[in-house]
Length: 213
Image 1: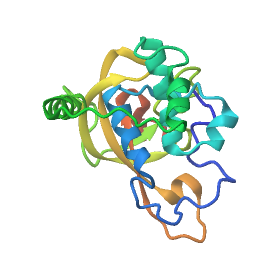
Image 2: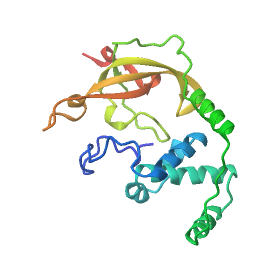
Image 3: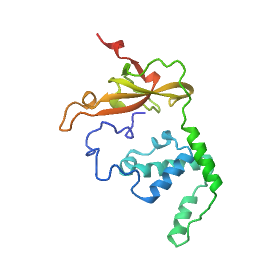
Image 4: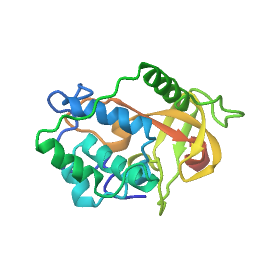
């Protein structure tokens, strides 16, 4: 879906590199939120349902928190009003519950690692160093193909494996890391040229020669 969440290449949001941008987390709660989101299989589709104004006002992990709460509500893991109830209890000085279960932690880590292991891609259409062009598209639903690379030409850097196509999870396709020149994507500017790496599903791509000439 081409909504406000697809901010790559948009103008007016200030510099991409900001002070402390290299830090993974800026506050302790962000690390906890990242862990919860991974364990609950956070849905990117849910993040895209966040109202545009709220999305722009929120920070990165605040968006994750918003979506995680709604996914847990939809699954019945928490009940309506439970989060607000806990907010009141914590504000009144009640200590947050703590649970220590090393075996559960180990199991969760292993399960998470398994989720992010892509099986090998069978018969990938493209190989490393192949030139590819991203198709031009305007999907009405969820997609993992950002607008700023559509129609651009790049080079395959790696074949990551096979994964479900976000638009149609009944289909499994090879996934590639594709390298693009910043100049090709956004033109020249005060900054020097750099390489942009984007992971893209096979159906997003065509041979770069396909539309040449």
